Length: 87
Image 1 (cartoon, rainbow, N blue to C red):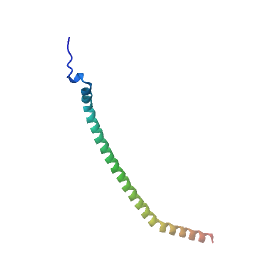
Image 2 (cartoon, rainbow, N blue to C red; image 1 turned 120 degrees about the vertical axis):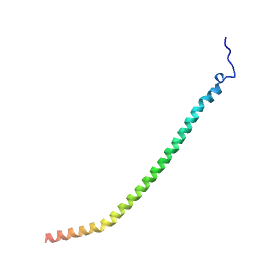
Image 3 (cartoon, one colour; image 1 turned 90 degrees about the vertical axis):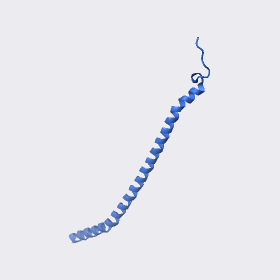
Image 4 (cartoon, one colour; image 1 turned 120 degrees about the horizontal axis):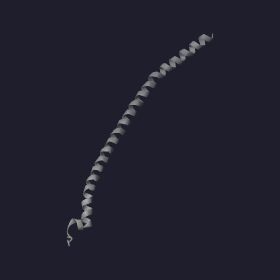
């Protein structure tokens, strides 16, 4: 009959649990690094979006500033043409 060595890792549940945690600890570290990388990427995308929005707002403001007088001129001209056509 074989005897079981009580000092072997196979007979110690705590040792087995520690051995099983080693790969899990590595996986947890890998997941934490992956999360940090994703968070950095997300921050970068948010900054890009903010920059894009600022540039777009600037372009819209310039367009409005430039087009407003032109549109006013067109309306005045249109009204003048309509008035002269009705007479």
